[in-house]
Image (cartoon, rainbow, N blue to C red; front, side, top):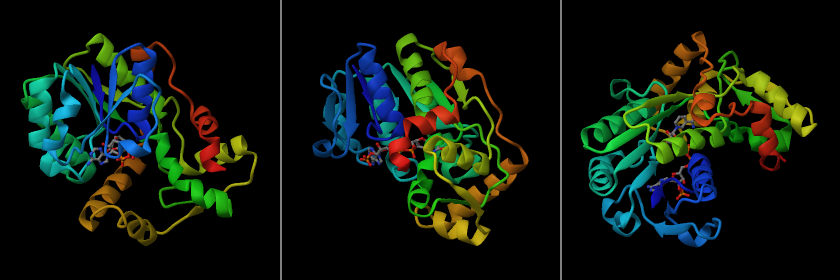
Length: 276
Ligand SMILES: NC(=O)c1ccc[n+]([C@@H]2O[C@H](COP(=O)([O-])OP(=O)(O)OC[C@H]3O[C@@H](n4cnc5c(N)ncnc54)[C@H](OP(=O)(O)O)[C@@H]3O)[C@@H](O)[C@H]2O)c1
């Protein structure tokens, strides 16, 4: 039995489907079982990663875990949760982030912290360090739908954004085949700036989409709606630095799964309904 956390999210949901299709017993950890649907045969169990005591039923009989962590939000509970997972499971595949480093704080600091807790817990582990998710661009869906516009501050930041199915596939490969103690750095197959991605969205949807560069103050205000201001400042400094160094295109997805990583155009095609 493999437990998948974050099972209603982008990567977790894809992992549940892929494990199920591979014929593996899979259990989805969710906070609100009444509001989710999965293919029949997938077990759905209620649990909250910020409350270690809520995980006992979900962990019963589990031998491996695909761990999608609610970064920052549940960090206070992380030591107890990781201890509990390590007591029960033989293999933990953790969805981390490229650049994970406890010293840098904010999101990357949280991923570094989780990686350390896992490495120290005495459980077999695999880390899947993902670059930027193509799925982040779903944040543009409302303004594309209502105004035909994409607004971003970092217009020159070239990112090799990755399809959630590819991140899940690397994690699933590790769950099914081992890959113990391996750190996978995963990216999409092409490097694209935000204006280039907006153009691809326009082409796939067949509607005009223009790009508007926002100010740093607007970006700070927008991010502060979902992240503490100190973390936003850290994140913005990180993005300044990354703009100067485009994200690399790495071959990991093809190497692990045997299939090329999906292009951004394919990702948009898979999400047309989300943008219309
Ligand atoms: N976005 C990127 O570019 C990127 C890059 C590298 C790594 N990552 C990492 O990937 C992970 C997923 O990020 P995302 O933004 O893509 O996630 P997402 O799709 O929004 O999914 C988040 C999932 O976590 C669940 N969740 C939230 N709080 C929870 C809690 N307290 N207990 C149990 N489940 C909880 C949510 O369930 P509900 O349905 O209950 O809300 C949802 O299923 C994060 O750790 C993130 O840092 C992201």
